[in-house]
Image 1 (cartoon, one colour):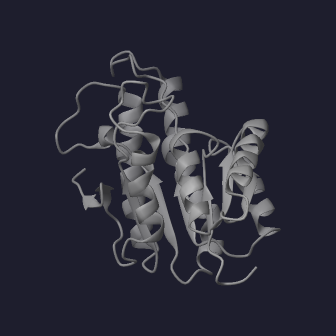
Image 2: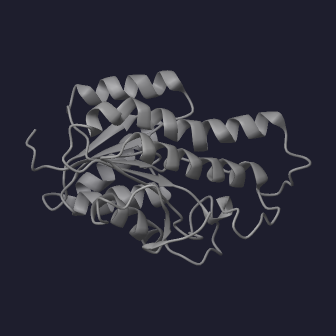
Length: 238
């Protein structure tokens, strides 16, 4: 695999924002590893992009990865190593929302642990597993898909506490990774309220609009911009 062919891994990419990010990166000529925990859904999404793009898109490869399970992450890294020794961009997009109708006083330990395991710890473990491949890139980038719900700057509004806290913690993971990886561009991003299964039909943004800021950080943002939280290509407080 030549150095000229840029390579990206997008987790949670079988639908929604992740799928749109994978599509946009493929349009830009990336070899995209489309990560998903469900083999059938992941393979179907990868095949959809292959048929859609034909000769115009970069290569699409399905990679089975459940970010909530350390063994799955390790196996995914091993499988990736059989296809490439380098990764240019990691997009930690996989995430879950279990408590949109709960308040913090009724949140259960199981809900918190499950949410944090996927949304926060999962992103960190994926980064740890794929850093050796990213270090072989000339411009390594990690993009963590966060949420405005994770902002502490304006105070919590009581919605989905486990989800929001997991995204606040993800921003913390981003800052720590940026410090540990000074040659990387490591950033988190709020895509806005997007019409997906999670965002619902009344959300104000399309998946295309939600993917735009993620793809910019993954491809075109200055390499020296790191350790920050972004929305619409602007740094925002968290």
